Length: 114
Length: 116
Image 1 (cartoon, chains in turn cyan, purple):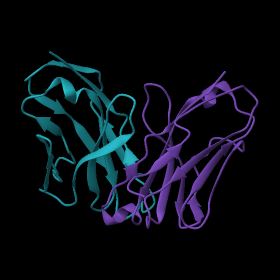
Image 2 (spheres, rainbow over the protein chains, first blue to last red; image 1 turned 45 degrees about the vertical axis):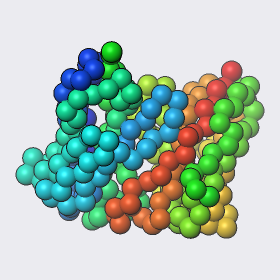
Image 3 (cartoon, rainbow over the protein chains, first blue to last red; image 1 turned 180 degrees about the vertical axis):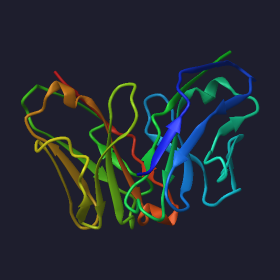
């Protein structure tokens, strides 16, 4: 079945550091890929998405590129801020099999210190 | 409405009592989902509605859990005879259609349930 694997957290960075959160997936067919962010005490918000191979999703300085050859969708940001501290979830939707729901990774806690 | 609305935002209940959690999805969204998130953990799928029917309820953890949706709108998640392990944040999400159309979900802010 479909699955998503994220790098384990927690991740702690200093402000203005470079961020990478790894995400790899297993799915049949050609899934769409998503990153969601959950700020403390809030629900999940869609951060960015990509629907086909080589697409790059971007939002708020974050980027992720859909790499079919490596089945990956790593999240990157060039210079993190304290306000980026949150939990980040990678997710996929498979057109071929899932149909009914997104499959989420376990989440990666990011803390950015001033 | 403009977003997915959940109520109550917080609920403290005594062990053994029944609770009802409500979700108002975005108007016109046909797909509705319930997830559970225990403290410090990922998302656990509970149930999915397409319209008023639930084609996938495979995530409901026991027969104490049930959910319904009416008018292709509001959904209620009911937990009977609550146990301490039911303590979690219950998240509702909606989507214009099944997620294979790449819309993703819009989540509500959740209901934090504490069973004492």
